[in-house]
Length: 297
Length: 267
Image (cartoon, rainbow over all chains, first blue to last red; front, side, top):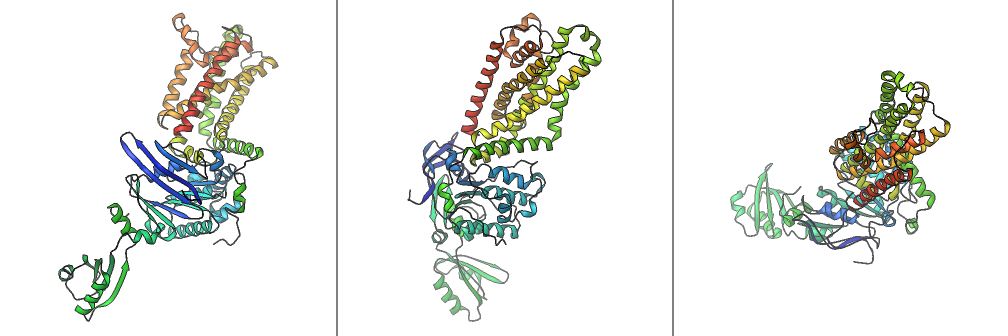
């Protein structure tokens, strides 16, 4: 593991009965980065995170958080957590939830500072049980950041949030990373990882099948996407070398090709009236789909 | 958008790990405060435990058999101790059993384990709740006995009974915790109820058992708590008090150890 690694798994395997959840998994979270863990359902993301948090023990391999076991409370005093499957105490108000979680840390933010930071001041006196699903996620986020964590685990943090609340959470996450925090994010929203992550690991069948920056992950897909308005026939373009697929929608032709430059030249030569030409490289979702052989989620 | 400067993970981080004793204590007290607040905000959970023992005591010891018990002090103590022990058992068995199971199922316990909650805070808070219930139940039972029950109890006996009840809640908390760590939120109340009802009848606290069953009563913690209550209230009791204390302490330690081990390993 590198010297700026704040938490990580090394050669971690975990089985549940005969099902292999993790198969020699290596993950490393570095200081001051937002690290996104992606993968289809059942890829082992939740198991990996629960082992990283010390909630489960690995069958094999080692796990460390700030150089020690995550089961040591001293290590966890530098950690904030937002889980996906959790119901906070229904009877407590949002400011009470924050006050309770803050009491676990040596040097927490004040309740009002947390409410302001996470834009949850309007929810301050609302009982948790009476919040909407999105508001509950915001309250859980407030609980996660109240202890000034050095390392923040966020499991699907924006599920159920409206666009405005999601943008707000994203801006807080960027701010935390700027201030030196490390964030581990698991998400099904690939645009979220694309917008926020410094580094991405794609998991499948309990192993890392690709890791690197978003650009590097995109680089796994050589295809580019061309769209234009043209009079050319779909079946004609389909026969051109290098063309992977062709479709038409909204009066536009959409072409996926490995050699986009050659195809663009040929398009322009074949149809002088061609217009609305756009070339786009593959996004994270296409890379994800190709890497995991799954439909983009 | 917020413009206020809020110092997040910063230069403070290097010293972030140490937790002064005062803050550790504060964490336990804060946990206990909110546990109490939660209970007060869900009176439907707490009120039956607080009201049922004294209501049943008044029904049997005052309304139905009041005249007979006034003439038979020993039986009056037997009946009083029965509903007193009945009251002490409930909050521990259900407060720990059903609530821990539910909080495990809802992921709240996992979140608290992932957060740096001091390991003792969670159990201490629930323990304090069960003990507080024990005190309230003892107070209402003593008040009912002294006024409507016409049971003469000295100040020493009242104080002794309060101590016995507070400490006597512990084995039932441990049993409840054991149920809560091993069953689902739906199953826990049913299993706690099963043990609760079996213990009430098979421990012989409510009525004298036939000889063939009486020997088996010693396996139930309620029997030993009942014997200690007899001792404090002046009724003849079976066996030495230290033996009853040892059994109750043993049950507490055994089931707490099994449960804490389970909580640490699988949550």
